[in-house]
Every structure is written in C-alpha cells, then in structure tokens.
Length: 425
Length: 156
Image 1: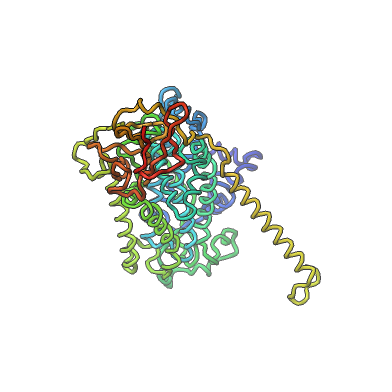
Image 2 (image 1 turned 90 degrees about the vertical axis):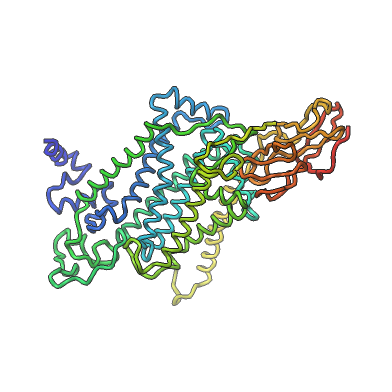
C-alpha cells in the first residue's frame, strides 16, 4: 500500500518534478534512478559483485563517512550552547551535562564518534594498504586519503581543547610545544596557532574556528573528491579477471542499441571494463540496502556507548598545575612516548618521515601485484615493512596508554596507580 | 590571440600575456601575504612578563612558588634568586623534587638540579633564571624577559 501511494505521488506532476523516477520496477528504472537522483548518482548504476562482499572492504571507508556525518550533526547541535570564551567554555560543558535536555548524550555521541573516526580512518588506511588498492590508477586517491587522515587528527586535536578542562589545556600545551620544535618556522607556527605565547583566550577562539569551520570545510571538499575518484578510478580495486571463457560474452559484444547499453559501454576505467556481464549487480537495491544497514550499525555503535558511558570531563583548566601524568589523546600517545625521549626527533622528524613515506608510497610501489587481494603473497616485502612500522607505533601507543604512571615513569597497568604525593609548592 | 603567426607569439600577445600573468601572480601573492599577516596578532592580551612580588622579608628560607608567573623564588640566607617553573621540553609546570634538591616535570619525566640545569630526561635546555631586582618601594620585581646566570642572586 505505501509503495502504491508513493508511486502514485511520483507519477503526479509535483512528484515527477522532484524524483523523476518512482520506485523502480524494471532494470531500466534502476539505471535511471541511479543516474538521475542527486543522492544516488554517487553510485554507478551497477557495481561489481565483489563490492557487495563484506570482506572486500569491511565497509571501513563508508563507516568513516557516516561518522563524519554524525559528527557534523552533533557538532552543529553542540554549537547552540557552547561559548568559546575561557570563562564560559567549561560552564557550557556543565550546562550540557546538567541543564540541557539530552545535552550529555549529544556530547557523548560527538566524543565517541570522534574517537571511533580516528580508529576507522586508520583501519580503512590499513585495508587499502593490505589489499594494494593504492596502486595505479588509484595513487592520487591514496594521497587524498592521507590528507583526510591528517584532517581527522587535526579535527580531533582542535576539538580536544574546547571543553577547557585540565585534560584539554595540558594536551594542547604539550601538542603546540611540539610544533615549536620544527626547524626555522616552529616558533612562528606555534605563535600563529596560539595567537600568543601561551594557551589562552586567543588560542581557544582559534582552535574553535579551525574546529567548526576551516577543517570541516576542507574535509567535506576532500571527501567529495575522494568519493568521486573512487568511481572514476573504476570502483573498488579488484584482482585481474581471468580471460573470459568462450561461453561468456565479452563486454564489447553487448548490444549497444539499448538505452542502458550506454552505461555498460566498455571504455576507460568504468567498473564494467572487461567484466563478464554476470559479475555486475544493480546498485539499487543491492548496494543501497547494505549501505543503509551499515548506517544503522554505525549509529548503534556510537549511541550505545554514549548512553552507557559519559565523555570524560576533568576539573576546569588550571594554567599552573598540569595533571600527573599529563597525557595526550590516545592516538597521539605513540608520538608522546617518542617525544618523552626527544621532542625534536619524536615530535618533528618521525611524524614528518611517516607522512612523507605514506605520501610517496603509491609512486614508489607501482607494480600491479596483488591488487584487490588481502595480504597477497606477491608483496611480502611491502607488507612486512608496513606491518613492522604499524606494530611499532601500536606498541608505543600501548606503552603510553597503559604503562606510564606519574612523572611518566614506567609502571605496570595491573599495579595500583600510586599517585605521587603532589608537592605543590 | 589575434592573427596566429604559425605558433609564434607576436609582440602584442607577449605583452598582454606577461602583463596578465604578472597581475594575477601579484594579486594572488599579495592576498596570501595579507591573509598570513592577518593571522599574526599585533596586540596580545597576556599577563605582563615583569611581575611585582612582595617584599624580600615576606619570603621564607627555601623555595616559594609564585603561580602567577610560574616561577620559583629561592631564598638562601640573604640571597634571593628565581628559577622558571616552565619545563623547557613541552611547557608543563615542574615540581620541586621530594628531596628538596632540584625539580622534576610530571609530563615527560625531565629532572633538573637546584640551579635549573638538566640532570636527565628529554628537556633540551636548562630552566631559565629570570632577573630579580628591587623596586623603589622595596618590593621584589621578577622579570621573565631578562635572563641571568644561575649563580647571580639579589643580596638583601
């Protein structure tokens, strides 16, 4: 019944002016829906059957996108109450917690989704590496993805200061001091970032503007480019197809007189190049249904912890006494561990090398080996190098997270956390 | 371009192109420079780096912390000197060590001796010693913009 009503509406003058195609009844409708709708045109009309297999990507990129959308919506909601002034910011946090209806939950969702986004963007990057999906023609999209990863970290870091509690204040003091170690321009960069010599009102408003306008705008633009290139580079990376067997019709021999034949023309790098016809399935309903299902899963993933646990909020920022130990957010603890040995090497050289290495990776490793295959045996060296670097960073992060006690001394996590007697002079 | 002369640039087009590109580059460069300069503040709403403390007799023997300027005032008999409490590593506030000799940083574990020199840890530089002087009304003035060697002290 609702289906019939909807089709009736879509056939009316107004309905046709908005939707053009009703609920698709035929293959032709499905094609037309995918190309004529703004929301759906991100997809090709048909996708390779591999795309639907969950283990091809584990949906990691799409999960990251969904988290960004959830973060944008909850972030806009938080802006209705948050005041970026040093004497009011912390009070707005308390207002959200105690006064605003559902304020605490919205803040919790925002916080959880931010942590998860760093995690899932990282996992997505690992997936693309381990399936060799960065190889030609997808080199540049890997670089765009790297920029998106850095923007994600930047958004997390700038958002970290806004609650203006002890955690926020000292994480930013430490983080911006690392920027000051960069050769030549370091001090100037820190000064511009903070709008002064110390973390104060000028720094708060700068971080706020970066967090709510500058970085999200850059992120939205890059996401659009990233998705557009996924399509123009031929959809998801997939292994070389075996030569079509005689009973399979080569794509070029398909009838090209029909309207939908246009979509299946075998030219350039569309997903249908060289694919036997049976490997393609319609986006609507197969892919669309899975995408909606995945969104529901992601929403549950942030909503459940947001209801069960509150986002941390420590005492109000105190510019004199750092907490002991003062720790950066978890995704920076690997760097903080390095920085605890040398700020210049750990804070500037190592991250600089990591980013540079990742950026040039697809231009160095170009052999089309193992594309679209998890842990291909043909890329043992590349996989070994990447895995060792990844394991090192994860180990350092784990040490920073669980094995560092007061005064940054090594301490087993299962031992009682002996808080060193605070000798505040 | 008017009248293509078999791929070669005629004088009029050369002048037009040169002028056009120069204007475009100048406009872009000037806007970028102005935008960058815009972000550097000319006025800072920060506390003064010179701090007027109490009179010398108000401070007891040993270490006193002055939170307003994150500096230790150290009294040794009639000698007064100051050591900054801002860790030179990443800007945390250092604490006096439990044994009363020297300082340690809670963030990354740097240790300093009582003169501010680095004993261990990642700190690259010793803690600076701000100049201590007496104002005309007999109160102490600690000037963080002036550094003195740790051996220099105000004798009262």
